[in-house]
Length: 334
Image 1 (cartoon, rainbow, N blue to C red):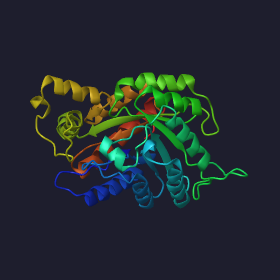
Image 2 (cartoon, one colour; image 1 turned 45 degrees about the horizontal axis):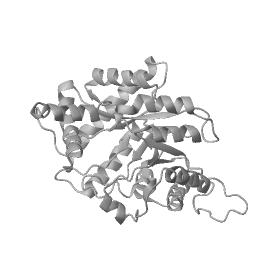
Image 3 (cartoon, rainbow, N blue to C red; image 1 turned 135 degrees about the vertical axis):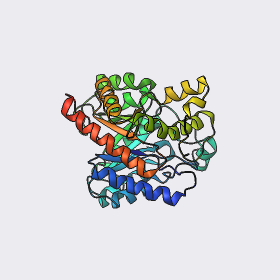
Image 4 (spheres, rainbow, N blue to C red; image 1 turned 135 degrees about the horizontal axis):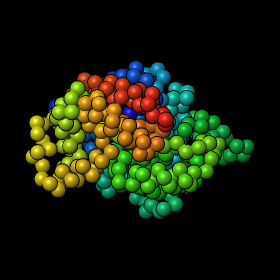
């Protein structure tokens, strides 16, 4: 599960954080493998900006599920600070912390300056920072002058995240697991994971390619109800595309019918990997994605306004994935 910790219309940040914890606890009860949080800044609708702090909060409120970043936007941070933060988390919650890294700023130019990102980025910065993070999280070597404490020797698993071919190629070169952001940028999904698998070089971290894909899922009792609930997602996506970001809005009857053709096309392009429907539709949609991508895991994103109906969507999706495990040759993990 990937959680943007949405702030709902009529709700507060504190409520969004409470909902996130309850959702993580529910995901754990359903047997989900991991629960990730995304770094975004200066967005009133997203409460996960202090990602490492929230990772610790959710890890402390659960027992077994892996908790991590999906991701930390590495250009916004010094690698040493990231290593110390996630090294601390790894010491507090051994074998339960993931460090997913992205190379986009995840915000606007004004906020980039506020994050002290006043230097020009080059194509070499992200690979160099990833390598430094790997060194800082590995066991300290004799004579090593810069040591992350906590951090050194924790070997927190590093994942590379991306929506283009750049991170796919880097993850393959470094032998790292790869997560593709098909929950909002699905266009290059098949091309990116094919490149990653073809160019993958085994490493101390990973013997063979490992792919996670982002999947927006809205599951309900019927297709019609799921389409109604999905109108909250449609409104969010339209706001992103038009620069009119708002808090997560309640669903609207027949919202899709009110859209102009170009708006419908843009939303459909954004959500091309989405699975929306009743139990049978969800199972068939996930099966099609599994067969097309051979993904090792689905990372679910679910923008449902009513938190209780979001938990029910997770129940339906977990049941669909459980059925898939019995019928598909390649296992699909939550």
